[in-house]
Image 1 (cartoon, helix red, strand yellow):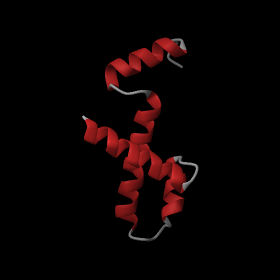
Image 2 (cartoon, rainbow, N blue to C red; image 1 turned 180 degrees about the horizontal axis):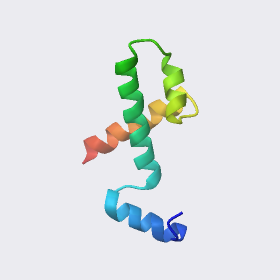
Image 3 (tube, rainbow, N blue to C red; image 1 turned 120 degrees about the vertical axis):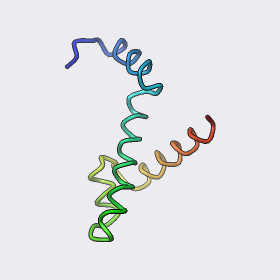
Length: 75
């Protein structure tokens, strides 16, 4: 879409965001889930929100969330 090859785009992305694309995307997904959980007030099931965010299942969400917390604590 941007006219760059995959490796160049990845390097450029890392330069601007200081993480790889997958990590950045997971951060956005986690933020979405947390915000929806606060706003819906139990109108939706947690697993529904996790799926809406793009996670395959709850374990992949919690794994990504724990990794994000670990990365934040190590900085």
